[in-house]
Length: 430
Image (cartoon, rainbow, N blue to C red; front, side, top):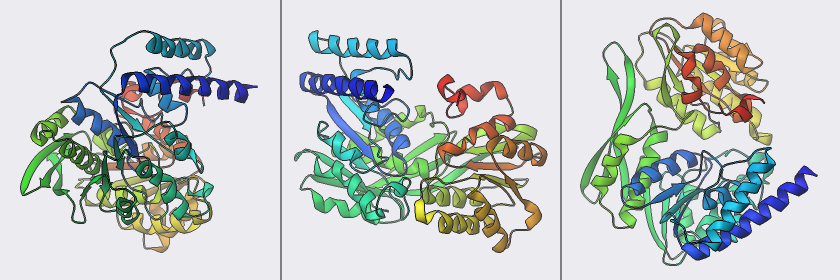
């Protein structure tokens, strides 16, 4: 019965959303990829807000229900029927009466199953499509026949891009870059490793004496010019890529890039994405607990390995879910990478046992590898290990709920609701 009611509500909200888009005609900026969608959406919001009235997808509501909520400007009702009824009324008022409406909608578009994006593209026609990264073994690949099928799924954002639209692609992902062949629309690229229209250089962590890492700096090179960008509260290419993508969009729209770059002084890094937090015993935490895929886990660990710390480097690593037949080999591969980046591993979850054993086989001392069945146990282990000056990195799939481990080692646990992912009461009940 609940499933039937959900389908009815989704159908009504989608119908209302179509009429709203037809009436107000906002510019649609659509974002997809297997890595970095939410961070890119948030950075686009900051950059475009310097020039337009903008609305973005709330948190990571990127599904067939989440996108209509963004179009209509509504909140997720979860299990509260009265909220969903209110949402339907909001949609009706937008259709019947003239309201102030955003000039630009930034829509994060995700896919858990085949044809998820295709179905959304039947009623969303982007003016700008931004594609982040997929990686060799993307998240959710378990539900597709092959990685190629995942690539095809993401490509619908290119195929349904308006002919006079703008395509922005990550030049460091070959599968993404190849999508420029699918459209005659204007295309701009961004990247760090390869040549691109906008390229990130001199990406460096920032340190304060006695306090450790507090942010990062980078330069965005475009057409012979170099634009400096400063980010506080987060580190890593994971934040550099979204900034570069956002500047590429501004460039394609003919906006001033310096003004756009300056807007990032207001950037509040999203929870659980390489965010720097204060930990117990004067430690620092790199919170990357939002979700995990092999490419994101690898990148996070490599960046963590380069950071300066006066104490130990401790990694709380949870299972990477939905990898299907790639699960064993990818956990073992990540274990080998982790062995070169950290001093201590707390392997959390059934699949991460293979990660931990692989790290040991790669040379990490067995006494420095701990095994936990769930997040709370991992947090208890971390509490006993963390000393002055230690640096902690945490990452795992959403289902591992590693934010619960971090809550136990925050310096000020009262801030958990403001700084950690999945702190809404609906999530806390799960």
